[in-house]
Image (cartoon, rainbow, N blue to C red; front, top):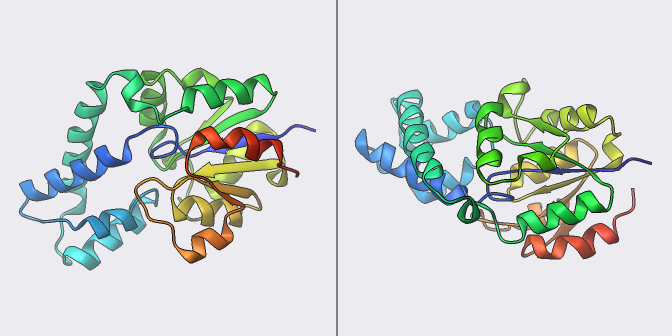
Length: 220
């Protein structure tokens, strides 16, 4: 029986969430908007349409989402491009991926970031070659927290959803993975753990180094 482990990227494998949040606030300030951290936490890992709605609800109906987002991308990409590979990887990311491959698991990515940037970031961090399938947010009609992106990853891996394990860091990963019929391991990064997210998660870990023991107890 083939089994797949589907990873989120930002905040799970790569330490990029803090970069994106900094870039959003810097881009917002250049347009005269002070974007609250609480809003940024709500928009992590969700689709752009959901994100836009949350920004406008918090910052006003005239919030120029597309223009500020474009500036955010420029700022964040400059930071990522100039960062050494080892500083982009979350602790134990490379080690756990190497171990999972040795155990025979199929590895995939389901990221809200578009495919080209997801691949580029993973390549820069030295992690791209671990994955059999990579799904970006621009490849599905409905982004997280809908299940589409996880179902697409399972389909590309040719593994049934019930034989897939999702590893992510946000409520959107938990909701999307659960809706896809998969067990979810949550490793919170920037977004604090809440009771709903905790109750829906199969396991809640403090870091990737704990994933070996968790996977060893995984039964489909």
